Length: 286
Image (cartoon, rainbow, N blue to C red; front, side, top):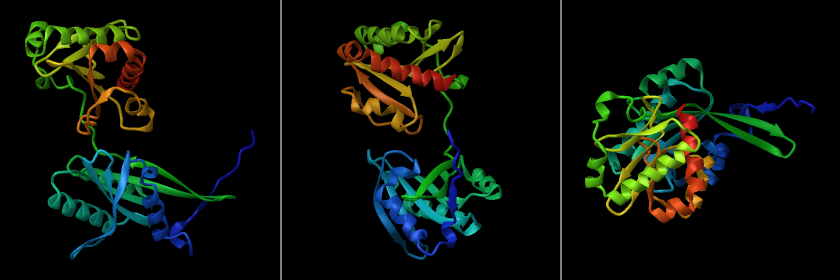
């Protein structure tokens, strides 16, 4: 197969494809920058004494917002400060949302990537590099996330995070029939991971593999059903969750979990989907 060398375009110095053009492209389809299932909430949002926020995006589920600052060329101090300033203004005015600062730039230099990285962990900030590619059909855009928000560790990795209990504790807290549903999840997991076993803790029933915590998912038996939290990134790869008839609760961004509420019928009829999701989560956990 013939290799074709791609021709990139410098947007900063281009007379036609400028920052406003890039802003409009993202506004028309915000999902292209790779921050999840988002919609446009506002564009050129005015902040008194602080200029205008390029784009305000909101998660489709309504819980999170992304303050997006666009910069052509290489990153510099002013845009980093501006990105954080807009994020801070929005989170103070609307504390009911989870806010994330997003910087989109053509060239995120190593120097400023290190600077942004210092804030990460204290400020949820994402850095995305955009490359414009010239094609016979027009200009194509490639967005690459070079810095993501800090993710929390898996449950059970911190000894203080898990307080051991036993099966009877969960039969009283939930119900015997819903603990049996958790057993079915364990059976499904054993089909691709024979050495897996349950670990009963105060806040969840986790998984152990080879004598160590391996919580790619956790079970929480309740009175009326089983809540299964599966740790998977919120991407198109897990579209099978939202397109299925499973009872899907809000995505837990703090821990990175899809939360499913399952009945015996759900587990019986959707076993292959559940198995696929559990296996994906385990593969990412390894």
